[in-house]
Image (cartoon, rainbow, N blue to C red):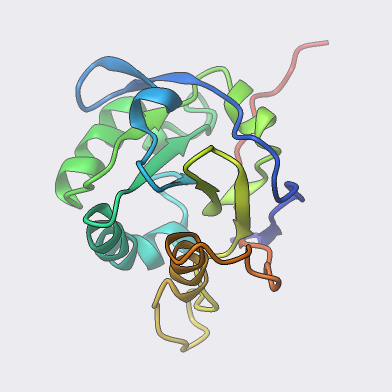
Length: 188
């Protein structure tokens, strides 16, 4: 597994809009339809990445905790499913059901949404306030597969707590590390 670090995304930048397929329901969902009352967390992820698998259960627990506080989580998979069929929409729907995701898991077939967010890796977390202004971009926490640190979601939870208490964005924004997004090969 290759370690890829997240790209920069400026704090206070507005969340790029999107409308993507939810493979579980078969409907398209937009950012505006899904955004939270107080905050929105967008995570680029996929089914097969060991870094994502490592945090899935805690990510669901954190989402369940903050949903009650007016926060929405939105997961997006942008991987090339032709070369990585384990990330297909059908298997995305199965994962969402099996892991009991309390949030939509959307498919970015064109990869345009990942490009708009300058996403580079899975998982890659973006936290936005109620006006969809970025307040945090980076890691879930310091845990990685095989590093022995517990999965807590500390960094994302801290960013959300700052929003909910009307505090300033976290000063320490650690880049996420994970598998690279599997980009489609462009024909030249």
